[in-house]
Length: 236
Image (cartoon, rainbow, N blue to C red; front, side, top):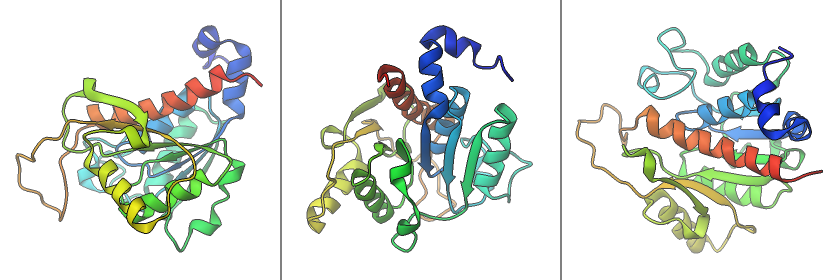
């Protein structure tokens, strides 16, 4: 295992690789976007990661979620993902929390102890709460907007939250913040796409939208890339 970061060190140098190994990240939501974000972080040398998700793997997850396979259906997502991550780096410190971030649990998360918060959750109200809470912490927030109903990976982009265009989720979040009068206290970057297709099939689950791995993974890896870029460019 001493050599698995050799290509990372070759690109960014020993000092930056060392900073990556000391970086602490918490990822909320390890579905189609979050699971790939965590994969990118750990393979890039980030060794201190907390993963948070209340769900178990179901068959409809298999087409796009990293740890979802025919063998893991029915397992707790964070447990299956932790097992996979430790196969990549047995020395990593992976904390798996099988719970949702919501009003009832928000106070149990000490976001100040992290360098970065990754928001990859779907629930509108919980997402608004996480964004506000993260923006009040010392951590840097990166957020995923909606990754469903898209097919073109070249349209995945990064922008500051208030400058995101063409994303219904971002629009709903901004409207929600304005209605509540409780705005995020800091600016933060989002991964999004302005593409929006109609579902061609019939949904088998209420309010479900079609999504595919080549889009969700690009969202997730882009989030991981934002963390890596920030750590590599900021010297201690």
